[in-house]
Image 1 (cartoon, rainbow, N blue to C red):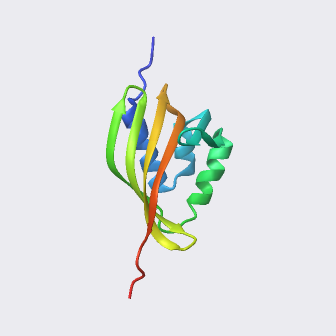
Image 2: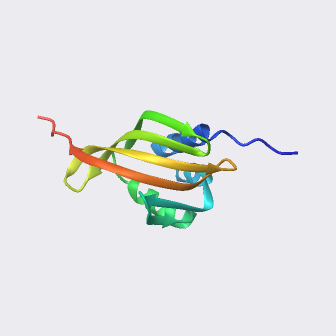
Length: 126
């Protein structure tokens, strides 16, 4: 008997929620053990949960980190999320728009690609 897997959009949503909660264990449970993350199209950034965990742990240290979903498109096993991410850059707090593409198999992310837009620094409060 086959157990149905969550649809790819639901997996991407769980990924976004775990990211915003900075829940490293929940986030790693969403990625396949041998998952790979790329800067689009093919620059490998991390492969496997240990490398992904290290990458996310560094990012989670940023005090204002938060991803806002602007638009989601699904096409079969692929999910494309257009996001605005609030971050702390070396130059100060700011935002960056990006497109995350997730390939989902058997209810887990097996590959992810990042297309990064321009960052925008936020004005300091008076």
